[in-house]
Amino acid sequence: MLKFRLSSKILITSVLFLVFNSGVFAQEINFTNGSWKEVTAQAAKSGKLIFVDVNTTWCGPCRLLKSTTFKDEGVATYFNQHFISYSVDAEKGEGETLAEQWKVRAYPTLLLVNAEGKIVSRQIGYVNADRLLGWGKESAVQRPVAAK
Image (cartoon, rainbow, N blue to C red; front, side, top):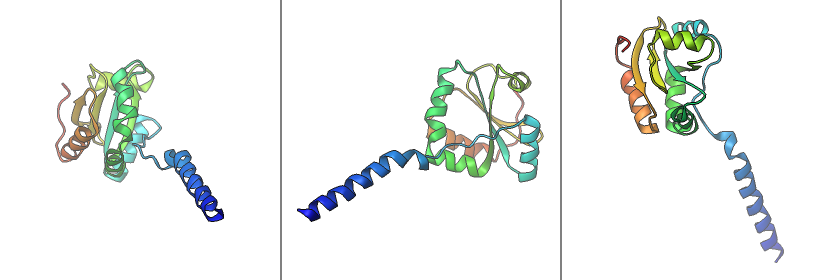
C-alpha cells in the first residue's frame, strides 16, 4: 500500500511538472527588437537575410499566423537559425514608412529582404507551417525581386 501511494505521488508530481512547465520549452520565431537600421546592420554583419512580418493590430490572419505558424517548432528552428526576424506594424511608426517603401497592400505580408533592403521574396496572406517553411527554404537562395 505504501509503495502504491509513493508511486502515485511521483506520477502525479511528474504530470503536474510537465503541465505547468510545457510553455517553458515552447519554441517560436524570435523577432528582433530595434530599428530597421539596426536590423539591416545586424544582417550585414551576420550575412543572413531578414524575415519581415508586416502586419496590423486589426488583422485576423496576422494574429492567426503569430499564434500558430510562428510557434511551429520546425518553422521556429529553421527561421531562428537562418534569418534575422523582424515584425512591423504597417500603421505605426517606422512600419508605415517601410510598408509604403515595400508597396505592401495586404496583410499579413511576409518578406525576405537582404541587408541592402532589396526584397528577395514576398508572401501575402496567412500560410501554414509547412508552406512557410518551404517558402523560407526556397526563397533563401533566390535573387532580389522588384516590389509588386
